[in-house]
Amino acid sequence: AAIITMAKRGAFIVLEGGDRCGKTTQVALLAQALATLGHPTKTLKFPDRTTKTGHVINQYLTNSVEVDDKAIHLLFAQNRREAESSMRALLQTGVTLIADRYAYSGVAYSASKGLDLTWCQRPDVGLPAPDLVVYLDMPPDAAAQRGGYGAERYESTQVQTRVRSLFLDRLRNDRNWAVVRADQSIEEVHRDVMAAVLTRAIRPAVEEGRVL
Ligand code: T5A
Ligand code: NA
Image 1 (cartoon, rainbow, N blue to C red):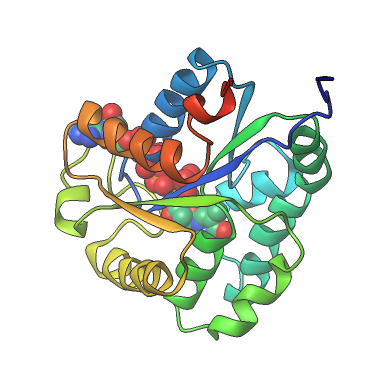
Image 2 (cartoon, rainbow, N blue to C red):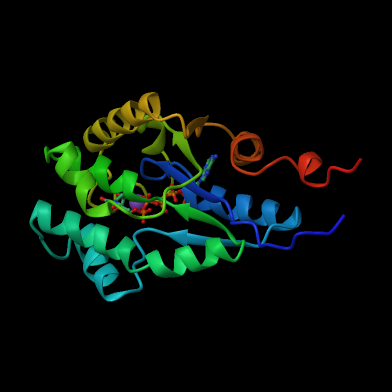
């Protein structure tokens, strides 16, 4: 039979969680593992602190400027919007995208300050939706023990507790979410992330290479 060579859309995977839960570590390990399995892979990080909006966001997070709660919310959303067209182009050419935070962080952190949840969701409407969100769940007390914790704006147990409960609400209500315990060793977290990704975002290799 003829082989149909239409490029398959890449998978879009997001890792979410509270501060210091290990997202950056796990995004890198996941990207490496998927590349080894033959999937062209690209990683993204939100906020992207390298753009103009990212520069202001970085100043805000490091407490060197104050910005109105609603205004900074819109700036985080704009920072994602800047990446939209390149994300779509990559997915279309078959690249698997792995994002370190996404619009869900935008909603959880802003809503934790008392902003209306529906209002918080609005500026991200229309962005590509992930195939799978892996939520790295970390008790705030355990996160506080990790290196570097406490340096940035939202890194307090009080804020992290509110953020976590907003993430857990989302997890309960969205079937595209999977939860992984983040208070395990790096290798154990990676094993659980891989299991979720291979069963729920990437079709198992056995299916892909199916023969008669
Ligand atoms: N935010 C973000 C908003 O308010 N609105 C938005 O729209 C968005 C997108 C910046 C902040 O902005 C907020 C949320 C944040 O408060 P960020 O730049 O992603 O977001 O900052 P963090 O989430 O704090 O990222 P970190 O780099 O601090 O933490 P990670 O990426 O979760 O964790 P990682 O991998 O860097 O690990 C942290 C430390 O723990 C160790 C690592 O070696 C490192 O030292 N570690 C482990 N130690 C023991 N066991 C493990 N399993 C470990 N895994 C990692
Ligand atoms: Na941080």
